[in-house]
Length: 228
Image (tube, rainbow, N blue to C red; front, side, top):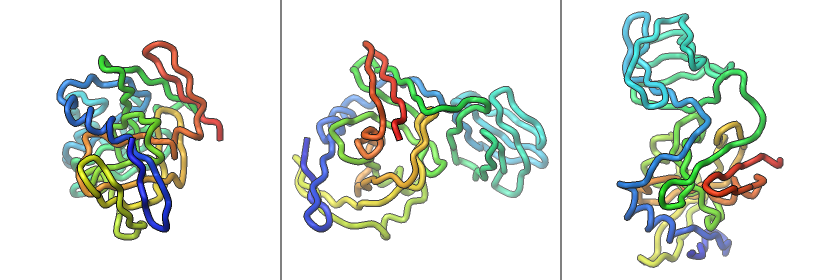
């Protein structure tokens, strides 16, 4: 665990040991369970969208049609498609993914399953874009790699710059606010996060999210319930 000094003397922690372990093991980590439906736009045709759902093979869905997973295509235009998920309209560009809770589900709970190394991994989304999370109670805030931040569309230049000391020397980080963070059925708004200059294999789901949860672990299963 490493202490961070950012901005006006603030100290934040980041689970760098977890990051280094993941960098070494990322090629063999198993996927954790996720409650969200992951939707990607692979292409656009006249009157149809080519969607990938939950990592499956691309399939064409006609405008006005609703899939078994509750994804409805409302319109297509050039390289975008407007879909409806969970009663909300979302615009996807080709190559973009979002995660959305299937229609009819609600509440504030997420159930995660540990992989073979004991890590809790899950798919969630930040500002409507799919992100792969690693649960890290040693990180004061959600931590994003530079690549994830760009993919989400975060303008890190507007954040608060600072420096963190790591085992590999000083590293630049930027403190930002995330509009929305979703994991399973849980949605939080205006969540503190840090953006790193380098890429990370996973986003760290730190205490700026977890400290608002009731966390229960039963063997290889962790249940998060939103407290407020």
